[in-house]
Image 1 (cartoon, helix red, strand yellow):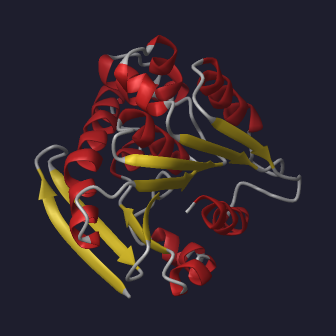
Image 2: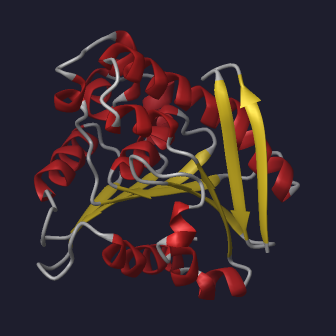
Length: 240
């Protein structure tokens, strides 16, 4: 049921780890939190929470290391971190997507993205950057504005990595393609949550007529794994 694949990527000058759970079903790429690795979602119970969908053959779950997120957490040079986020996007499109499609034996299959915290940023960013391959994004408890954590950096690498910043100026074919997709933005109202980040992302998407829905959960839902383990099975049951 579980497989692990690793390879070296020149795009980030490092190792990419891709883990899969499940045998058949619609592919779902789940991004870990800022410092997480590809198996974080298993250790914190999210894979188990998705067990019903996995067991029914409705989804196959994939996850990769949070390469750029780790750099952010370690407070490395902001320009290098921004470069990593931009390069990470290329790794997703040009390396991870082909690996998932090969595993699914379908070179045209579209993929759902999901994630929590920084993982939500990556899930939404992947769909907006590459709407030709990603069909739905589920962002949970998202941190969508990374500029404060990057010292106010607005380099090209940062700008083109951040949907909150580049979407307002986007037009043309890519925007048209994103408008054919759907993004769910969910947040709790409990400890360590910041619903304002979710609403800000929702407003940017709405202003560009990109289909999206903001769901605000209760004060009993904190910025933590039990919240995300409750949220994601419901959304994937509805959207896959």
